[in-house]
Length: 403
Image (cartoon, rainbow, N blue to C red; front, side):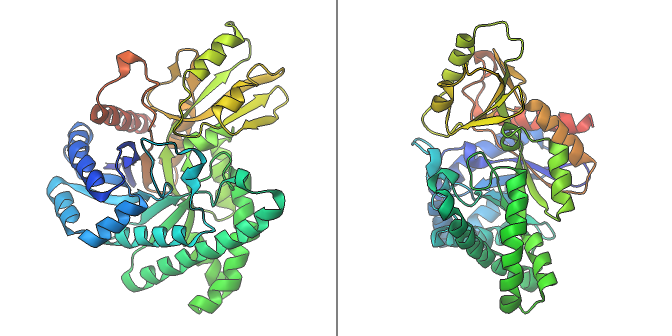
């Protein structure tokens, strides 16, 4: 649905279980009309579509027309997709395998180009389209000596996607962008590593490669890359890294790096400064949240501002009482409308700040709520999934109305 004078707001359909196209389509038909009735009854509503590799292949094979016909009848459109999880995302242990295949693999290239070919057929005329993707790979898979090769191979593969998107833009007039999504322990984790990647790898390799492939000069090559490779600003991920939204966005803008999508999401945190309850109580509160499906990376900050990073919640819990630690943050996409969870707080204030910045800027028109951890809600706040999604979207709309 449209928000403000320029924005399109939706939610990521990865909340709905489904790895085949029939499962995905059935989930959309079940839940989207209910959500739309509660948040956008008087206008068309955008879909943040998530397709696994399997679902994308099946959709291409079966044809897009039935889906397009249903969207036209029901008042839906697709403007953004989640191309980060390639395989299963529900009812199984995902953890670091969410990065597989990474950007060193041809399977990732083929999957991403297929998603763009699907999106090109679904986009409303004149609307730009974006697909979020992994931060190249999972950092803990590689030692220091291997990372240069991983960056090189990943960038070569990204440039294949850029070439494809440039041709679509030239021939069809369709503008689409691949939105790299930094996250803790990704090969690209934060704003510093994002800028370093663009400046040390992506742009130099593009200036050397694209002139030969596209018949452009190095300056045009730079513009083409910055048009088609952007950043997915996941609020949860940047908050876990203790990043200041205004400084990050200013830094990206100064380097010419565009934000293709803002994922509106909230992490969990705890400020240990002046705490009254025992440390064991906080350890228990965090421990009760542990589950075996997703990674819940932890970044702790000490009294000197140094960051201490743990790859998952169980490892972090071993050090929760470490001397000098003043704050904990953990990667946990909790509902955005809740500010606190018992002893624990959320990073909701980062969302409010990001929305304030967005409303006064010319950055992306893609806004997507990405919440997939509902079980931490207090029992009195738990409702069926369609109502929960509507509650998330209506909270965002209310925040924007207050800007």
